[in-house]
Amino acid sequence: MAHDAHHEGVGHVVPLTTLFGVLGTLLVLTFVTVAVTWLDLGPFSLIAALAIAVVKGSLVLLYFMHLRWDRPFHAVIIICSLVFVALFIALTLLDSYAYQPDVIPGYSPSLQK
Image 1 (spheres, rainbow, N blue to C red):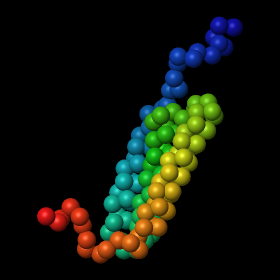
Image 2: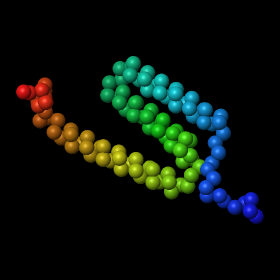
Image 3: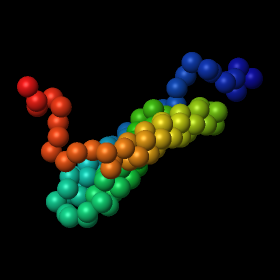
Image 4: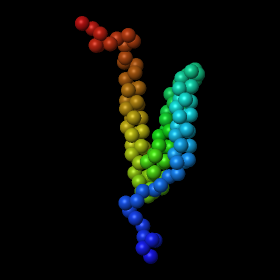
């Protein structure tokens, strides 16, 4: 009966092959991120780089931070946090785009004496 007890303080042991596989995937995705800068994708370059960054961040969260084997509640907390960060960034971008027509090209107050 004692061997069936759940130990709160014991973490999940991940095989080294899994960790090295994820590490290899992260290195390949890092190269792909750099390779995207070599291509002229126009406005889609930023979207591609952000998409690759989201995949890389997800791999780090899932495997290196052991979220894959953790309680689902922790995943909900992290996802809600990321949604709020995305919301704050989107609202900031919307506000800055609203003032874009008022920007004078070539004008920089810090360069004036």
